[in-house]
Length: 634
Image (cartoon, rainbow, N blue to C red; front, side):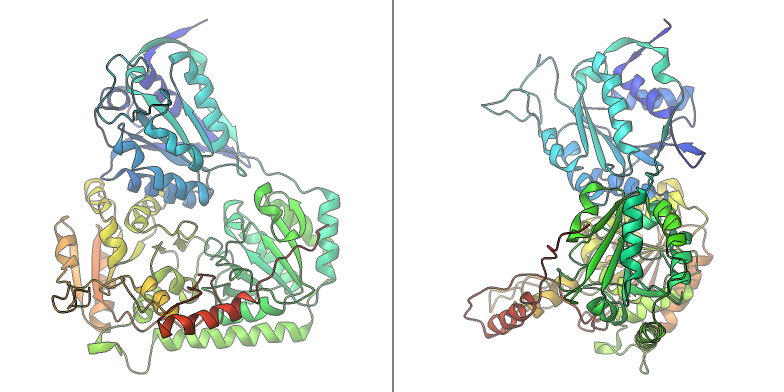
């Protein structure tokens, strides 16, 4: 037996460099590289191993220095999503806060079903110097460390206490990362003393290993039942989720829709599964949806969910589908998602299912009057979008400010069809979901499973790394920007071009609007001075100069005031070869057109405020329309 003497950290790096994924006969490296921030927990372990690999095997597992541990996870997640979950990055951090900073990123990855490998350092296995700096000491358990907080937000968790455990831990990690149904954050913890320990490893551990990403086939009986239900529908609607993208099923979806006339509503992750002007595309569905998709959803008699987890925004908190006889057909690779809403279930890959379903639906088409109905509804919504993109009076916000609708419209219309818009939190994800006219399947990237403030810049970096031939427009409000703009430094460091549209509206516009709607009067949502007279945060605007902050990263910053300025800035940013920040101030009180839908956020049942009691009456009215969808499936 041939052996190789390496430290645990060196063996880990060498192993990761040899891993590949494969689907449909196409192979790619599973790990594009490793992000890392070094501290005492990993600098002499994983850090030394990455240095050695960079010097001796350039390109095997490239290292990139990040600025924030959470942000590095976001970058890896964005990269993996753009690569349809077939490739990702590893992330190395020190022990203590360096490790726990990643917990938010881990939750985001797992909730969105995106693979990412987390390699946090841990306390000493031999406990020779305990208690350590940053060690958690519990009186009831000696083997618990701060890294145990990763357990509930990881799809696989392990800790390598001894070198002999490493092969099993790494192989199990790869299994989960390449499982389309069970993927998410994978956490393997490395005590800092174990990282530096030597061991004789079997050479086979480092041989090229190809992990097949499966396409589970639909059972014939389940497929036939689904076809039978669909053929009996007069007003069917497809809910297209992210699984359509990840399985590469966009062409199969278009073929089925064109053959049958079934319209499509899209989730945040599913936007782009049909381009916006496809005859069967009704755009966004649910709380942040279009009036067209929501009107069709209300009366749909069969809802066909494909690759969706039926998030509450998608179902408008279970109020979107109001037909008392509505039935569900659910296609999903994940057992946890396929059983939702008590539908007929097809536990299988989306592309394989759609391709197998099409011949079973031969001769079926929705009624002509239904086509006319949804076509007219979609035409009306498209006209509405154009009216807010290009209002009769431009820059009609307070003081002549642009509206966020106009900013979105100009970026949409001035960008190329293959460019990518990136967003995650605040008011813009909802506005983008409704308004953005996606012209390419990969042109829309909004993280809305966790809706994590601070994802935007880091995510944009990951998108550009995955798609270097596309311009990336990061749409970020001042709230998210202040949470985490640190990876602008990484973009400068690596020479990676992203275009950041920094929207200043002096607070949390999304929650401010929601607060007002729920009777809480925008309390705690605006960036204001503490007023000495009232003792409240109702003074003047804080003098935050976010453009100057962006300039401090060494970036080109274009300050804009009106539509002409902004359009010129977009053109300049696209012509540049390096990163640009476009700064614009908008009026936060002018929102996007209403979706005609709802989102369940409970309102105080009793209150001394009239605004709150009024909001509670509206809440109770909507709450009464919620559906349980407990009719047995088949």
